[in-house]
Image (cartoon, rainbow, N blue to C red; front, top):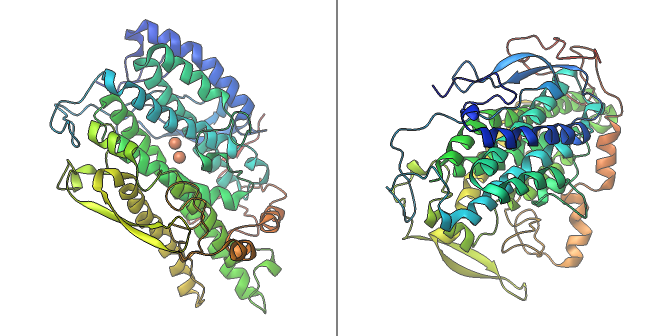
Amino acid sequence: MSSVVSSERIPNNVDLAGDKKLQRALEAWQPRFIDWWLEMGPEGFQKDNVYLRTAVSVDADGWAHFDYVKMPDYRWGIFLADAVKDRAIGFGDNLGKPVWQTVPGEHRNVLRRLIVTQGDTEPASVEQQRMLGHTCPSLYDLRNLFQVNVEEGRHLWAMVYLLHSYFGRDGREEAEALLERRSGNEDKPRILGAFNEPCRHWLSFFMFTYFTDRDGKYQLLALAESGFDPLSRTTRFMLTEEAHHMFVGETGVGRVVERTIALMKKNANGDARAEGGIDLPTMQKFINLWYSVSLDLFGGEISSNAANYFASGLKARAKEDRYDDHRALEGSMSFDVPKADKSGFDRQEVPLRNAMNEVLRGEYVEDSQRGLDKWNKQLEEAGLDFRFGLPSTRFHRATGIYAGIHFDPEGNLVDDATWEKKKNEWLPNDADDAYVASLMQKPIYEPGKMANWIAAPKHGIKGRPVEFEYVRFDG
Ligand SMILES: [Fe+2]
Ligand SMILES: [Fe+2]
């Protein structure tokens, strides 16, 4: 039943037509969303036909329907995963009680904040990526960029649906504000740091989709456990779309590595830059950057907010059912907290509930390593000694116990002078950004052709060949 999708103005499986007030409110928000999309969505491609996946229902074959569509005509809809019968809260103080179908008054503000914070990241990433189409390395990549963009737009819809349905007037106001903030804008920035970082070129785009969309995956996994059932069902469906974004990142970086290896072999000195490619140490710097800003998205290591979310049943660990103890009242985690004078660390024992951000971050760290292992395998098979590594979780942090203190990528404390001297080796500097961007001056629009700095993908999209005309410039 819930997989039936109406053909109304707003595609949905939530019986929107049965709630006229909500339907009117969302229909009033829709043109404002389109205005935002036209202003802040992919610049210069709004009239072109893009071979996109559209969710038309939530069942196995309906959620991935492929066809050409002009992006402003994309069917952004509201889809919830099917309800789980007799679902009970799986963690915290309310363990075993029935899930909530409406917002419990005592959790209203916290829940709204969680939804707004998640919702804010969705349009932010579209804004960060809006100029990239003009420098695409292939039509295949251009299409993938737009696929990610329209789905982030749909994720915004998912959160706005919750705000409009369950939070009354302040929910509607928050939905407006989600269209008013702008990534990187000094006066009205997006809420979280990584979503205000500029995404200047395609290497950053691939790193972003690998590392920052992966933060999204873990936040969504934690919210999918929520005792607030509509949030759980919404985020469960969002996760199906999120997987493609990380695929774009992982294979994107992998293809750059592949091409760099080929260029190094071609050059007598093994110099990829001399052949117009991206050298491995530069890629490592971008790993350091996007990984560290994404680590910040998990919040502080020691967090009473995280403890409250868990206790109240609002946000759990990822895949909570893998754990034995769902109350987490026992146990602790220990941290090396930097001393006030930065001369070393004090070991601190933190109750498990207060360390929930770190538990989620730990899962993310492990998951992030998997892509690096694959890229390193490519290097190994090519007979190269270079290996990529994730920097320490202390490195280049702006939130939590390591914020404002300098560490090297191995996690050792370094003084300000050392940091100033070495930071250009550890993080991309303006010259690195300028160099990478200089390789991407012109877009490649010829079907099947790739820019010099990246290898072709192994496969096309949905069984189509790599040479398929994924974007048609009919506009
Ligand atoms: Fe998203
Ligand atoms: Fe995403």
